[in-house]
Image (cartoon, rainbow, N blue to C red; front, side, top):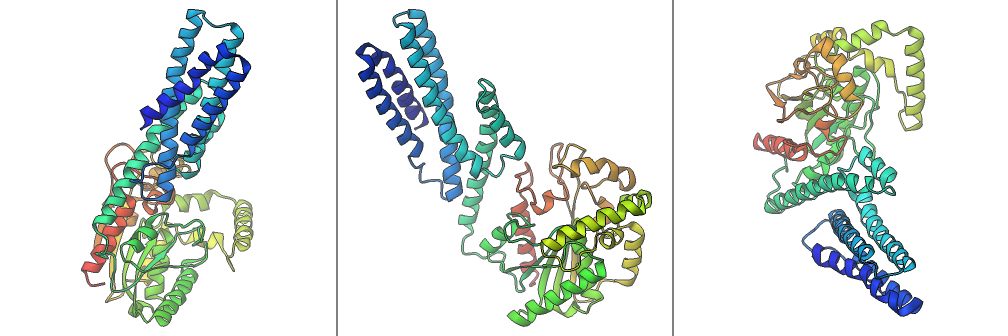
Length: 437
């Protein structure tokens, strides 16, 4: 289909070479016909085998960009031949080239805009490169080839996921006895339009899970956040009659959840706690920062953060209280007074970056600092600090990348080679179901 459509575009462009012999009227008529065909190709729906609306648009954009590349190559070859033969006047050659460029311009941006607004894997770096280089031949072609590879992988990956979901449709493999409560980490909130957990909750719900969110403030002392979570758990149990919840908590959210269970009396309302990259033994790097930072700097950063988060909905954020509770010293004290509660299944998940180039900014930068104090880490939390409970799952894909503190909750919505984050959580919840939880 792409080859045929490219050939049609190429013929439209080269019809101008013939129409040049018939005066301006012939040129205008041919130009209008060619423009109509290009618009038709650009607007034509893509193949029906792309089931998701976003993927349909993305696939259509990729198709148009391949048409652009093929037509561009053919048009350059034709232009060289026309000039070499010397059959046309200079004005006619200029007319040919101008119209060819305009047609290619339309095809290129018709495809690029589709991809730009629908691709998840086309990050900020590549989007910026396309905007900067989109009008600069041949840089736009070089950048385009790279982005086509990225989007091609995205289409293949997402279509495979759709096949997997169709195969298990109706099995409800994530329909646990108790609902899932997903608890965010420090300096984030559960936002409606930007889910902290990325594409994970939708995948779980698609496979039968009932999902709630912690909704605690972005930053507060562990004890205070634990109280907020305890109130949230109680409200869910009383409203739904579900009896208990299965908690999946990331980062500091794992400490908050342990506090809610043990120190705020929610053990009878929690079936399981799965902590993900939680600093159970603290971060020595945090001790170092607090020790070295001046009181003035701490007060300035804290006041600005607290003021900003109040505008976003936090009732009483406390930046420094949250940071201090993540130090190795304070986590050791917390572990002494907050033992695991009987009747609750505890397990943990951990991951690490493999180097400073793994993951997205700024975790790829902080990795080196944390490594100096804590050893192998995910950009914030060390591997040893993540281990808690009866079982520990360590995630480490092949290659040089690793899985960062943000990757493990799909914060960046990035498909990582060797690690399907959505499928990992489906498996994790499926195992909770198998345990009767």
